[in-house]
Image (cartoon, rainbow, N blue to C red; front, side, top):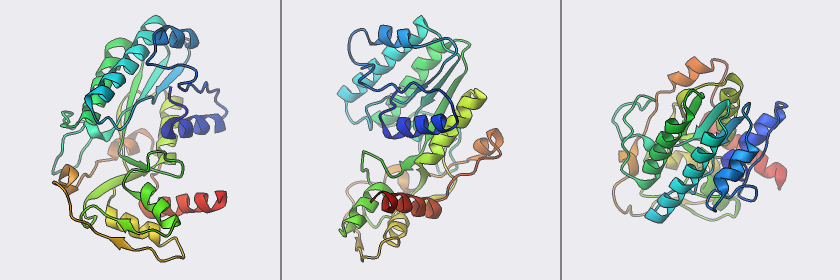
Length: 279
């Protein structure tokens, strides 16, 4: 569900490259906000399926978006009650975690103070309430970047697009806040591994390396021949997450010892190569 989006499209492609039969469901096939969506989805599901749920209206910014996201998951849950499957994977978000001075992990408190995090916590609980004995895997990725991101949110995705046009990059404050940035292909590969192993439980998807937005901007700009100015701006309000959000990624190493995250310098270089190859 959500195969037309940034995450869903990458995950579907990764699974298909492994020779796995994938049914790509987008809003065109099943609109989760229309009457009869649950019945339509239930009719498409089979007992042997792994259902990967990515569909969401994100980021969730207001009460109306929250209500729509709950209705969408309500349809998914009703469909699973009608047609149970073999495995369910839900793509949540690291926004579910409280801020902390220490490393965040799968055991950290989930009591977010923002609607986006609240939306994902509620949707996680909704799925848990209906899956029964079906293995349920919940993945909570940190900030995602990659070539085909449609949101153009603040960070390496928007920095790259500005640099490609030779335009200035304006940071929030001095870009000093440090976050964990995950290459979209890494999340897709984690989804593939979880599906193949029929894994269950919660997994935070993060590299374990925090990098400031200023450093990310400088990595992006360094890939271009044309000079691009990186400048600060007056910050409005406090820094999100107190400017620092590190993660303990040992659970990923324990679950999939062969997997290695792409660190930011390599990831920025890879996305630039993809962009120039497709130009």
